[in-house]
Amino acid sequence: MSDAMIRVPAEVRDRLAVIAESRGLSIRSLVQEFAEETLTEEERRERADRTRDYLAEHFGVRVTEEESAAMGRRLRDAFTRSREDAA
Image 1 (cartoon, rainbow, N blue to C red):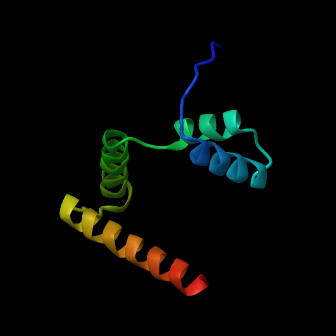
Image 2: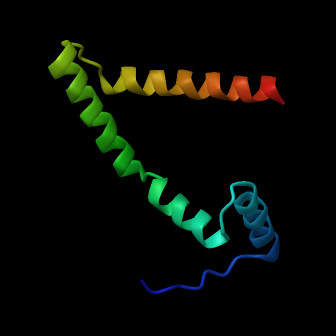
Image 3: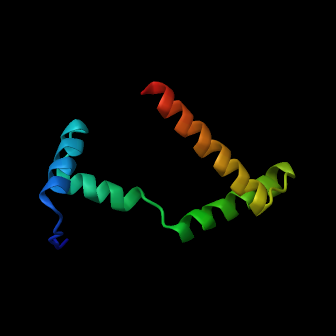
């Protein structure tokens, strides 16, 4: 595996160092984890399509894209509220 240099401002590097240390990782491992686990918009759409297909096939439930988007908004709102309540 070859390495690549990524230039970021010092404050970003320092922030990454704090996050990495809190997780017991190196900055390199933190960035690698982020890259491996973060989905692109296309990957999220594909996953949503597979989930809708699974629900239809195994449970007879047909979820439209609009219903899926609405549920996503509700979940994000609930997550935001729970984070605000915890703060």
